Amino acid sequence: MIRSFYSAVSGMITQEAKQDVITNNLANANTVGFKQDDLAVGDFGDMLLQNYDKIVNGKNARNVIGSISLGSRVNGVNTEFSQGSIKQTDIATDFAIEGRGFFTVSRQEGNANNTYYTRDGHFHININGTLVDDSGDTVLARDIQTGALGAINVGNGKLQCDSQGNISIDGIPRYKLYTVDFNDYNNLTKTGDNLYRGTTGAREINANVKQNFLESSNVNVVNTMANMITTMRTFETNQKAVQSIDESLDKLINQVGRV
Image (tube, rainbow, N blue to C red; front, side, top):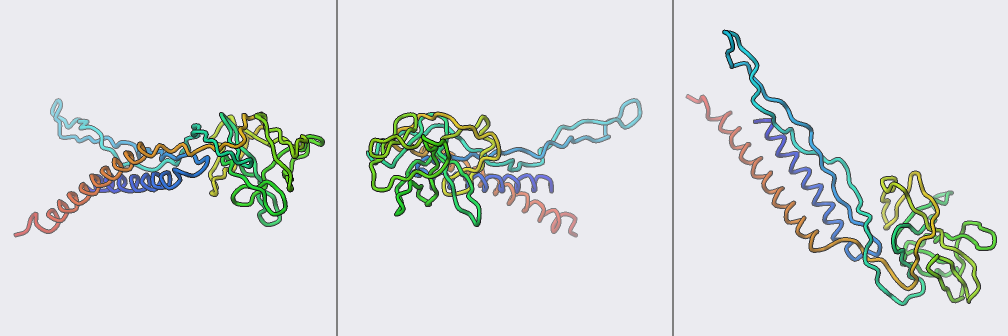
């Protein structure tokens, strides 16, 4: 009975964690380029139940009764990197990648410039004339003349970008957006602000870039709401199981055997 109590409680903990993931997905349903998460759930394995009540040839023999689950556990959170819908905005500093790939940005953190990756192409030009994301991180590109990796200096000029990510300022080719991809997306970790940090495996690619467009979140609100309802019902089922087990234990301890 104690084992069943722990199994039901572990189920509640798992469903609570799943609810947190679903809630975060819904909160970011309108976030540009957001990729939904899914909770990976595993189990603690099964325990074999057996006794020696069976008599064979006058001796007690092992009798396998069956197995009992020891409950569920959270194995991690997986990100779904499927393509969101591409929507036209007619804003020159909005960019979307159709297909695979990520934009690359640089963030000043202490004395270091750290590199992050994102599908959020909602950029703008700051007061210094540099193309940045919503958090002020510098959008990285290669200088067409030197090949050096750095910021995109737009100034007061007119920015134009072709499908290969080549950027012209006032009609003069100047930069190429630094877009990368990963063979294994498990190397990517969400760090907040709709950014990812890649551990290994980043390689430069010629992504299909669309100017004046943004990629929507890949969260399906209807399916996510259905998952939320299912999760809540599963949590309530485990909760009722815990209450039932608690009542049974109370009777066992306080009533059974009372004179």
